[in-house]
Length: 251
Ligand code: PEP
Image (cartoon, rainbow, N blue to C red; front, side):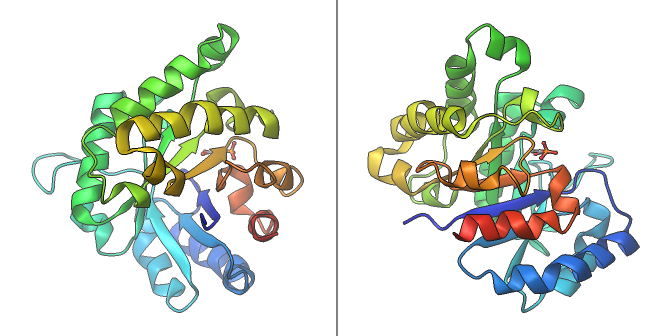
């Protein structure tokens, strides 16, 4: 059915030299876990160096963000074509991008369509803030983010999409969602929203990851849920713990 996917979001951590070292630590063990799609997403500075180390490992490479335009006067940005030269994946709409860099459902949508055009697999992040969670708005917020973020994606491309449910209150806080809560959002909100966009059959093929304080200890609880198809991992992806998480996804 859906191949589990475990992606590591390194955020703004690791110099190029440190990135190389981390791949040396993780690469061999990750390579041996063949039942799971593994992806690392280092800072853009390190993409070329890491790409040069990943050949033959079966580990995919992703960027953490990109612009939707192919080139031009966008100081500090990288384009889909630049990402595609080295990567197969791109994280889009991460809550930190939404919170600190003004990303909206509309800009996320432009990036998703640009990823589709470039042949990149977008890992599209959605999730409610703590205030929205406490106000009981999770379903409405996540439903809106999925519909708006994925609007206009071709039905033929849709099975390649990856959606990551990342409740903002669980990211980097050590307070992970429960497996049961993640499953209910994936099953009752995200997959039905995907079915609205692309039909029920295509929605079944799209992978939905959970992200937010996933560790080597709690990963198995998430992967035991039928609609949790892997994880987007922040802090624990910078350590050998990432290997344990990938192993848990293989079970
Ligand atoms: C993330 O940044 O996408 C994330 C899930 O972070 P952490 O695992 O550290 O909560």
